[in-house]
Structure formats: structure tokens, C-alpha cells
Length: 437
Image 1 (cartoon, rainbow, N blue to C red):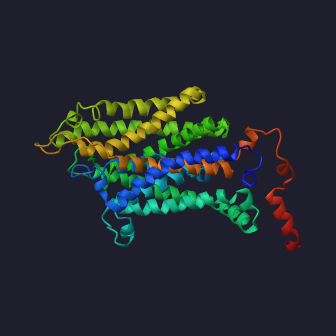
Image 2: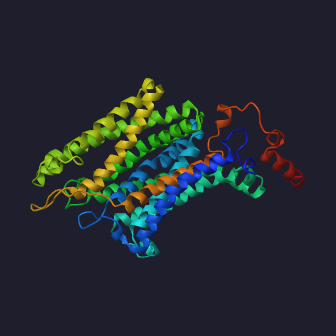
């Protein structure tokens, strides 16, 4: 029964081995679910958040997964709007990763509000003057778009595709996917930007405050830019991890090279813009507020000046220079290093824009306040990771996520039932011919 669900022309591990893997990851998932239920039933006193840290580990994780999930909207934009056909080999996986990231972000928000049964207040009693309201609306809508983009992949399952209605539904949805790609890019631009805008308008927090264009601080544009630049790197990183685990070549090098090249130039331009923003902030904005650059960096191991160097120089310019050169992209080890550094860099950026903002003293009688999350926060932050691994495993096993896999990994002998099987599209054509006549 299990083999009948696996895509044709590919080989998967034995079913007992697959179930064992799901059970191990599922145990981690259940640990996170238990912590989540504690937070829902007992309240946010299960966390270590306090008057200094109203935003903490969860919000960092939320902003980080949204940033790396940006690979979905940017890859879709390149594939369907700008016509980069080589990316059709990786677009399915980009959508799947984006679906996991955005559903995880919504899950984290559901835990963070403390009273999930009142989550609908965000929409019904919306604060129209809050950037977070716009973020909530765009996040929810874009998750709907990703769901629509993921459905055709589900409908291509061997057994589901045999049903004529689902076969034609999936085909027709593929035909109009450009509309959803454009919609997703539009929604992502605003919610990525508004997440940065929230930090940029914090007048009482000089570390975050930025000048900008009209009502939009520079962080509005930098957040969108960084997500579009580093999101594809996360897609490449997860693809490489999947190939390593499965010991198969799943995506053609042309798709990886193209996505890496575009991402490299995006990272380079973002790093230059981030450097200019930091320089202007440090030499103009900060002095105008009566402070100096080093007032915002401590000698403690978490928030030293090293974090600024790590974010911009090591995790910005270095991966950019590797990815924009053909030799760097084609070197496997260099590619691994570049995409890992790029993903680390955008996560560090979200870390400092959430936690370092809160740690810095803003009054003369205050000191640096460090933050240590509770085990419930750690468990519920790991929860989306376990959920993502399980969904990737199930999708990889039963859905044609990688269209080039049969071509890149030819199987010498197929099971008898697969050799005799007729493609669903052929069966449907034979069934529909009399009706058309």
C-alpha cells in the first residue's frame, strides 16, 4: 500500500525505517506541544519574559523563520514573473519550505498571544494605526497563498491524481500560479517591511530608531531586502541537507547556480545598504540623541561589538563574494559555507533587532539586562523545527517535490506493479475520449 503512494521512477527507504524516523522526530514534536499547552493553560508565566523583555525568544524565532521563508516569495517571483525557467526544478521545494516557515510563524504567534481563543481579535478589533496589524493581515493572507501553491503538489500524488477532478484541478491551478506568485510577492513586501518598521519607529530605543523616507524608516526596506537576499540561501541550504540525508542528487546544478548567483548579488547590495545605514546611524542619528556608538555594545559575551562585525562583514560580504563568483558557486564546500553564513547573518540581524534592543539601558540608572529563556520557550521554539522535518519527510516520500529526481537518479529495476502501471494522465485521456467524441 505504501509503495502505491510513492511517485513513479523514484526509490524510497523501507516503510519501517521511515516510521522509526517519524517517531523519533515526533517525540521532539510532542515535547514542544506539551510546552505549548502549558503556556496556553497556565499563561505566559511559563516564560521568563518580564518588564524589560516583552519580546523575547519567540519573537526572534518568528522574525527569523519569516526572513528565511522569504525564499518562497522571491523564488516564485523569479520563476513565474521574471521567467527564470531553470528554477522550475526547485520551485516546489521553495514553496514547501515557505509553507513550513509561515505556518510556523503563525503557530509561534498563537503561542505568544497567551490567549489563542482571542486570536481573532486581531482581525475583528484591528488597531489600524499599528504596523503589527498589517503584519498579522499580510502573514495570514500570504500563508493562504502558500497553501494554494502547495495544493497542486499534493494533488500530484499518484493515488490522488487518478481522480479526474483532482487531476484537472491541479493542472488548472498550475496554469494560474503566476497570479498567486505576484500576490505573494506583494504581501511579502509589506509584512517583511512592516516587521522592520516596528523597530525603526521606536523613538525611545535609540539602537533601533532610524530615519527614513516619509513614514517608512530605513529598516522597513532593509528587512524586505534581507529576506529576499537570504531566503533563497535557506532554500539552497535545506536542499543540500536533503540531498546529503537521502544520498541523492535532487536538483540540477543549473537551478542551484542561478538561485545562488541572484542571491549573491542581492546579499552584496543589501550588505552595502546595511553598511551605509549603520554608518549614518552611528555618525548622525546617535550623536543627535546624545549618545555614542559604543553605548550600544557591552563587554558581555552576548552583545559585544563583535556581533556587528559578524552580521555585516563575516555573514554579509563574505557569502556575497563567494556567490557572485562562478568559481565560488561551483565549489561545493564554498557554496555550503556561503549559504550557511548568509542564513546565519539574517538570523543575527533579527536577534539584535529583537533582543539587543531590549537589553540596552535607556535610562541613566539602568544596567544591561540579559535574557535567559525558560525551557518552555526553548521547547516551543524547537516545535516548528520538528514539525518542518516531519512535513518535509512526508512530502518527499509521497509527493513529486523534485521533478528531476527520476532523471538524476535512474533506477535500474522497478517493482513489477510499477512496470505494468499506466500513467494517470494516459488513463484519464482514455476515459475522456469517448465522452469528448
